[in-house]
Image (cartoon, rainbow, N blue to C red):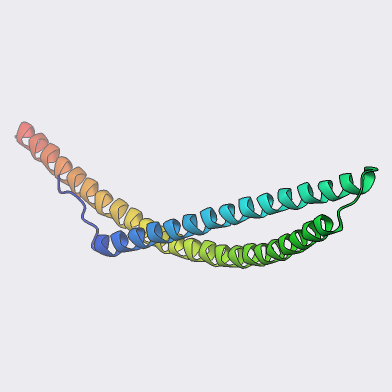
Length: 150
């Protein structure tokens, strides 16, 4: 039996490769986003730690070192700024991720269209072959029947 060959297989291969590339790009953006979120969490922990230190100093009855409090306050302000910058970066990365997800979805649609076309053409091809084989078998059976009648 003749094997089916999809005419657009090279195009399908290219689209599958493009889809895989888009998925890899999206995975890189997801990893970057996760890294940024981990960095933000670390900054938040540092901020809360220093906030706790300031509260401990204010609660204790010991002599308050103003320069120490000022340096803590200054450092906490820097942490706040870094957290705001990291939140903006995370938001921008989420926007990029959304774009990448749309690109992956479009590439997936393109691949699915060709896969469906390949499937339908393959079915038509094999249906035609089976139909031809059935006709040949009918012809052989008819010929044998006629030979037996004579």
